[in-house]
Length: 44
Ligand SMILES: [Zn+2]
Image (cartoon, rainbow, N blue to C red; front, side, top):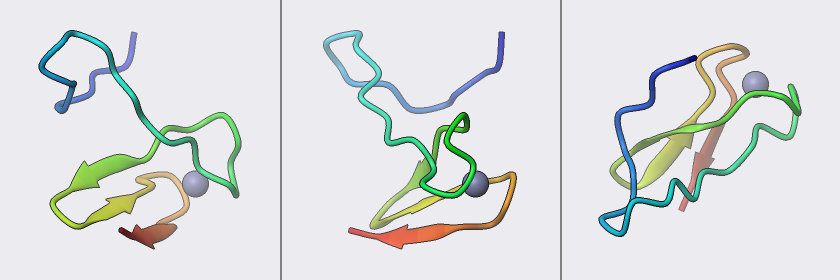
């Protein structure tokens, strides 16, 4: 199981998937999301 640092306070993990990788979730870093696999970055 991969570890993710950010989860919603209600226990659900509403994460966006990377549009490039498809099978990779984007990590949330303040006002942007970042894929650690392909370095795709999405600004919110
Ligand atoms: Zn990616």
